[in-house]
Image (cartoon, rainbow, N blue to C red; front, side, top):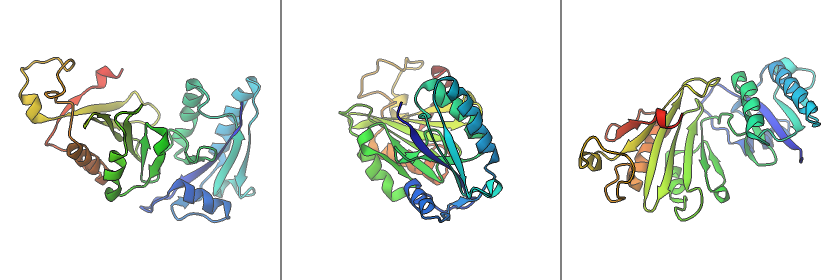
Length: 258
């Protein structure tokens, strides 16, 4: 199995943007990015040792270094090489179970983006279509371009905007419209604790006979299909930190996801 390399760091308690590639480049130059702060790396080292114990049983090896090496209680970052954290669903879950409670983030050097599941500094936009890459710490003016970049005629036509608290909004392109959902995760250590809603067009919804079955509705009448303008408005609200916009009906779909 090809080894992967990762950097773990801690976001500073400020509002400065921290684009991962820029943070990584500054660390390689021996500088601490303004979006970072030094941290006590000893819990991270203990988690890596626990992770490595299980990996050794599988015939894999992991190594790591803390920088500065003589100050683990005031580290700039921890570097590790070893098996890919996402090599399997069980490995990814084991990694997140150990590292999410440590209040750190980290960079996948081989992939060039944050380690899957660890928080961005401010926000992150993840595409389902890999060719589009990922964007971090975006501003409102970037949202129209990002959403319009999603190709509905290609595989995985979705985009997800996350924030530092683990909440997200996501859209799935269907023709010229979008299915839009909003999720709030309530506990980093237990992702079974969440609320998840689907946005619905109130005019289309009111035209249906209640109660109605939310499947098999023709696209021209389906309240789950929102316009681009609606989708952008919801993403903008999320980016600002506003609550779910009241001009839409929000159908709670927790039971459909468990």
